[in-house]
Length: 215
Image (cartoon, rainbow, N blue to C red; front, side):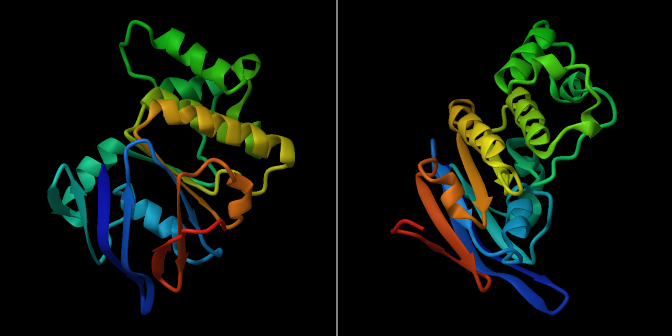
């Protein structure tokens, strides 16, 4: 469905990504593992159009475009969820209202369904800034559900969560597969996402390779 080719990126004199190519197929859930500092977050930001790489191209429907020229299209199609989701001041409900389509007749109903889906309907009026890490991730997933991106990129969504919150997020991600074309999830603890991914890649020393065995 979408393929990224030959991505190179440096910070100062350090080469972060070296000739990285990765493909996200229709219906795929892709797991990208790698140590902290290996460049996973940088790669996701490039894939989402948030960061301009030194070089690289994106291929969609047989058409190849330099990522530097195609970032606007990527921003419209791809949604990136940070490990620590940013929440606006105000209630949980208000945070979802920012994501819902303005003027839509069923806007309120869609927000209510999204809150119910992530199990936060009872916290709709709570101040979003006071939420726990797991609750923040669930708000971020509810906002993503309202936005319906073609591609969802999640950066360490289960990091630093306790076992119960970790299980909740995994279950929600399994269900989210029905609402998007493809997902990519990063983790430095690949075992925490066992059974979810259909493809697995490892990023190390600036390069990427497909994994054909269990991590």
